[in-house]
Image (cartoon, rainbow, N blue to C red):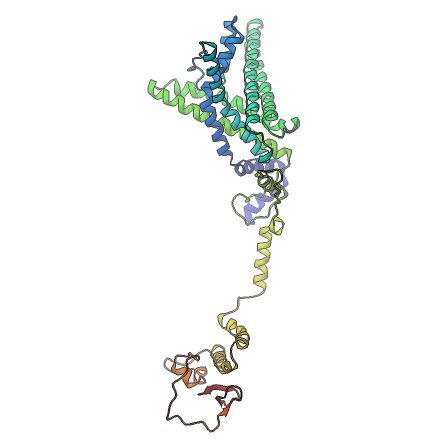
Amino acid sequence: MSGFVGWLDRQQRRHPILGAPLAVVYKFFDDQGFYLSALIAFYAFISLFPLFLLFSTILGFALENDAGLRAEILESAARQIPVIGQQIETQQLRGSGTAVAVAIATAVFGSLGVAQAIQNAMNVTWGVRRNERPNPVTSRLRSLGLLGVLGVFVVATTLISQIGAFVDSSLPMGRDASTVIFTVGSLVLSALAFVIICRLGTAEPPEIPELVPGALLAALAWQALQTGGGTFVTTVVARSSVTNGAFAIVLGLVAWLYIGAICLVFCLETNIVYARRLYPRSLLTPMTDRVDLTEADQLAYARMVRAQSLKGFQNVEVTFDYDGQYASEHRRRRREAADEGPSESAATRILRLREGLRRALPRSSDAHFEALSDRVEKPASGTVGEPSEAAADLPADAADTGGDAASPAAPDATCERDPDAARDPRSGTEVTPRSDGSRATPAR
């Protein structure tokens, strides 16, 4: 790389403040982060309403005698998704014990999809080998744990809201203080929930210090999503007609979930990049093969390949040609080719291969090779219709057949024998000597 691109690559390699975020973006593309995010958003969309139904049913049994607290918790849960928070009407599963059990099991199964997708994203980003990931039963038990963490997060958010309301009604500056308490409390709870989810959802749980960068980003992203969702509701949904408003709500919900899933995957990639020092990366490594890979590049690609191992006794070894310095090797080869000069011409190749063909063919063909060499070494230089000097030296039978020395000439009864011709003792044919002492085409 040269010019501005080369300078930019050197700068991002030298300064981690530039190289680390770039490495996070490259790791996101390496792991196909958009597809992981789409999978999470899809399952979140189809799991959302069963999850609310399940949560409402559990609260109905747990807080049967406190309808006010149950309503506040459900309202707090709805506020976590501002796009449809006002349109959700929470219902509770009712009926006989068997019907309620079947309905709860169905709601649980529908709610597990998003937790399964989150587990898959965590294992992919951390490069966990496929044979070391949880089996279908264990993974779903982990998913239940993830749903439980989300439920505790909603309850804790409700508790913070109650504390903020108490401060708002008790202190003179209570409104500002309650806003600060709610914001700071939500940030802390979001970061803590992210850490617990990462520890529980990853097959090889990372250490807590390794999860701090992503947890801080996740908390900030969650607050931004809350603000952005509320703005969308007040500026788009509230001003739409009934029909357009329904479409706006559905499309807004899908977009909100997808953006949230992208933020989640980016936070996961941030953790692994900083924890495993997967930076700096080569600037052009996602675009072309003609790059010099850094140690972080080689480590990231090796982890991706090893993560595809399906069995514990399957050994995967990753190597890189030229130690990953392919661009340098390409430049070295070009310099060597330039030092060697221009490539040989077709005539030079013919002359170089002449000796090998002589050894492979009968000795009687030597004269034909001599004539061919003369034609190559002395290209035609006369005018049109005037035979060249090399062509004049060709034997008569080769000239009559268009230069095809292998085609024997028809015997001529009136042909007289050259008195100067000698007989080749090996082939028994007559060979006409030239003025320079070399042998011409055997006379037949």
